[in-house]
Image (cartoon, rainbow over all chains, first blue to last red; front, top):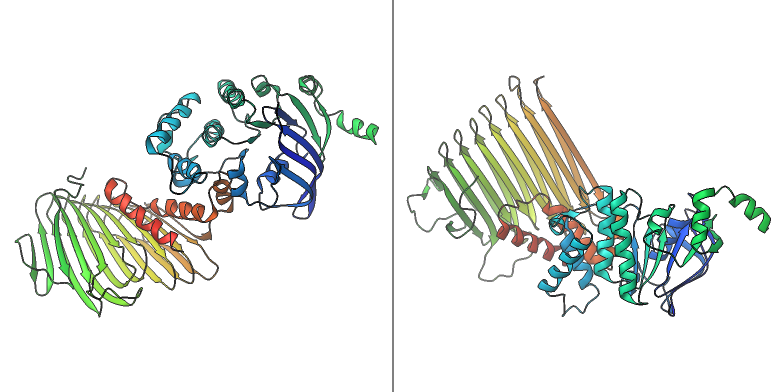
Length: 257
Length: 310
């Protein structure tokens, strides 16, 4: 476990004038996996969107540092090139743009203009990633997410993550819509990436369920409620949530006040 | 399946200001018009160059029954001075095509030179079981294009595609009409436009099904993306149906680039301008013919070049 890759300090944010994040504090170090859980509407996806810089959200207070640099000053694409990756809950379909074109452009956006990724190298990396994620070999030629099943879209997010080599990855409900085998494939690929990067990759997994976390074993588990992290712990917290759900949160928050 | 898609065996004719340098028995000049009579499978390219100043041409094409033809019309500005401004060099061309029964024509029309202000009229008559695939691409300049396709015989079909890109002060207007005059005829129309700066892009399309043309099937889809607030973009789809036993539908939209799509591309590190170019190019190329990969790549490259100039 290394230096902090991502530091979130007292982050408060709103959308359409409604406050959603009420002071999030979270530190992710290289090599760490943090699970973020909580009831619907607690602010989990909002947190991921704010980190990525989605224009619908306004940061009102707080800091987000990536490798010590202020992330909030950067545009969406600058944050991505700096090392943030967000696997979206609802990946967008873009007709007319092939997966191959899209990824090659994204990779070259991180390289010197005069040194784009050589074709052979790209094809080799793409093929390996397609194979690792057990996807159809015609994936590169298909239009981005168009006609993909829900599970294919989510696996395609992880494929992009593999090729773009981020410093911190936020996986927003990557397991929703996945069958048992797809959860295994996605989970083991993410887990392998963390191990292979040896402290170079920190991951935040947003999920409601234990099954994904059986493969991506978290070092820390946080429960979000009303835009704040109210409880943190280890894997035992996941088991507790599986048994009890989120009904204890109101009583917990009243007791904490 | 059309034969000879590549340009290797393609007959190429260089026609300047509507004048054919010499007749070769296959393509000839008659009464000031260029006439092409095709009775065997063929691939033809007409390289139509104009030096502006109101030059015009007329082309009449007759395709015999059962024949498969691949035709490319390529329009460009060509002058020794090469100093033309965009959209100020006027040319006109009228193309008439007769497709006999059972013939097949794949027809590419390329206006790739924004310096031309083109007045282009296309009329095609398709007889029984004739198949007409039409792809028109205009990547800049001014244009007024009128297209009329008549499906005159049982089973005749047309697939019509338009790619239109306007920028600066380009003004492009397209009128496309497909008439179903016989039973069992089929039409598909796909029009994709992108307009930037203070340009104008107007697409009016009509699908007409005549009384008695039962079993006909007509569908049209027209979309324009606006890339700036000063654009004037207008789509007017219309179906005029005089027969009960038909299948028909239309859709039309004008809008800006999907912001979620842009956000998604930027979230992968792609800079905004590149993301706009990629999205717009992908959208426009959705109406392109993918069967000729050389031509597809050439058009895509030109589309991207124009978009990157914004």
